[in-house]
Each structure stands twice: as C-alpha cells, then as structure tokens.
Length: 446
Image (cartoon, rainbow, N blue to C red; front, side, top):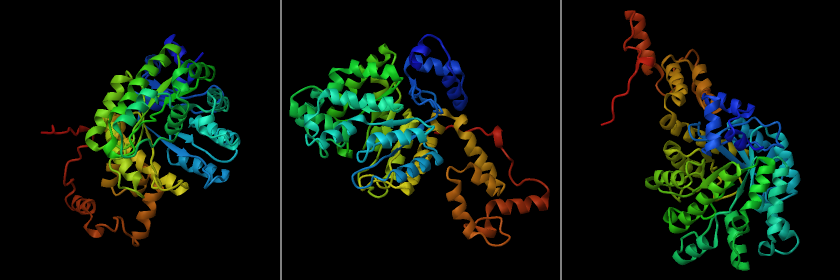
C-alpha cells in the first residue's frame, strides 16, 4: 500500500511522523496533505535507508541539486563528491541526470550513498541505450521507455521525471505559434522528436495507467515534467506551456484516483512580473499539487551567474507558493557543474527558499534570522557563524580581515555601530536603545 493510500485510510506512518517533526506541524496535518495530494513524501519502498522529507503546502520550501555524468565528464568518484557536497550544503533532494557511462551502476551507487530522496529521468537511459544499438531515439519502442522507468524504480529512485504532458496538441501549438528557443527540455525534446517521427501520441500520456502501475508497486512519486517549459523570457507563459499545464492537471487527478503521489514541474525562464501568476496557475489547474520549479530565471543574459538569476526568481516563486526549487549553478547553459558549482548553486537557492519561507511561513521561518540579528548586535561572531547558511564561507571572509584584539569586522572597525552603543552603555549603565526582541511589532506597509 502506498503512503498516499495509507493516508487516505486515516493511517499515520513513521515517515509521516518524521516529516511532521521536521516541519513543526502535527502528524495529522501531514496525513491530511498526503490524502489530499497537496504534499508528497518521496520515499521508494526499496530505498529503506531514506531519511524522509515532505514537499508541499504548508511546509518549508525544499531545494534539489542535480548531479550526473555526461559524455564530457563521467567519473563516478566526482559524482559521489558532488553528492557529498550537495548533502553537506543542505540539498533536500538530489537528481541523478547521468547520460554517459554504466548508468545502472552509477545510479545504484548514488542511491546507496544517499539518505536523502533521489530523483532521475528514465528517458535519458532509454535514449542512450537506443543510441548504443545504432538506432537513435526515434526508433525506441514504448516498451523500452516503460522498462527504463521500472528499472529506475527497482533501484530505489524516489521520484522520476516523466514528460507525459508533452502531447501532440502541445507540440502542434508550439509549431504553429513558434518560439525564440523552441524546446529546451532535454527529455521533453526526446519525446517530441519521437512523436513527430512516428506520427504517434506520447506513450507516457497515452498509456499513463502503466506508469501508475509501476509507481504503485514501488511507492514511486511521479514528477510530471515540464517538457514545454520556456527557455527564454520571450517564450514565458505562452500557449504551448499552458497547453502542457492543462494536460498535467488531468494527470494529477489520475494519480490521485490511483493512490499515487505526484508533483508538477514548472518553468524555467520567466520575467519577474509573471512568476506569481505561474505559481497560482499551477496551484489552480493542478488543485494544489506540489510545484517543483527550475529557477525561475528572471533574465536570459546571466550566463556564468545564472545561480543568481535563478535565485532571484526562486525567492519570488517560493513566496508565492512554489514548494521545491531546483537549483541552478553558475555553469547553467555553459557546462557540467563540478563540486564548487554545486556548492555555489545550493547556497544561492537555499537563500532563495528561506527568503520565500519568511513570507510564506512567517515567524516559524524567521526565527533563525532573529537569532542572527541578536548575535550581530552582541558582536557574537560564533553565534553569527552558527546561524549563517554558509558558515564556512562566512568565517573565511571574516577571519583574514580581523586585527589582533579586534571585536568588530574590518568594514567599520572602531566605528562599528554596536561597539559605539556598547561603549555608551558601559558609561551610562543603561542601553542606548530599547531591546525590542519578541515584543517587536511591524508597522503596516502603506
């Protein structure tokens, strides 16, 4: 029985209790969210050493880190190091997007090494194996596509991206109305090319019940991919993207009826003024299903710094209700990220997720910020490092600038505002300003 089926029957499992403790909510709230389909706990029944997490309504915003090989770099030790860095720097989940090497061995090794949920994109493996036979993606049989999903599920993968919303109608509309960047989803493009070459409907859409059967056997969460997501600001929120979203809304309902967990993937490159609308559209059309987004990137010209363009959009999206952010690294659009880029991307997106949570969850998310502010006022550097999202990086910037006997950083030195206030406090025996602390109230924004 899947977690969602257990929730629908009123059961509260150990996984639900663990997630409830992390999220500071009642186990009954987690059970209800699972039953309603507004949150998921990706936890394959073969991944028995998993530390379960929740993604969805009312929970902290999660961050995913993509790792994996390509034909340019396919060293397993490097991927294990990237996994270690991802987990050390706070990735909630990781995805193995490997496209080169012994994919079964790579995936099995990474899953065994990860206590966190892991996702994958099975169509990549199906396409690679077709190429090895000299046949190419267009010669794939639907059976090979479903076999790849089954193999990934059997290996313990907790959620799979399946581009089942790329339908003939969506591809026709893309062709009719056009785009600057056409399709930028690798898996979505594979499906579209197969459909056009074979003049057939997407097998994952046409035979969605087969995906549901696999998902139920392994309690596999289906991450309904956004194959028609925009790859440029000019293409955002167009008719092709929305056609796919409507299809995904129908498939979410099919998942719920079958007792299968599902979340929905989203864009992509979206201007700031359209981000909230994109989140609200997904929540409305998919009836509150968890929304897992790439970015969103707020401009197209941030090459080399797209972890920043993505984090800007990610913060806005999280505040609007997005549930998980897929990080973007400085290498996005340029190359395969190494361990250092994984770290940079995660720091940026954890900042984005937390910034959104301050809006979405209020004081529960803000407690850490308040602790940082109190430590900052007291010139308690160890306290500040303890609260920082990147304590190692913060300490590395601080210590080289500190002179002997200094208590303030090199930015202000003896003119440090808190140092000046402390000196007056010592002379007068009373604080310069009242310590508001928990009595603080916000003024209304006019």
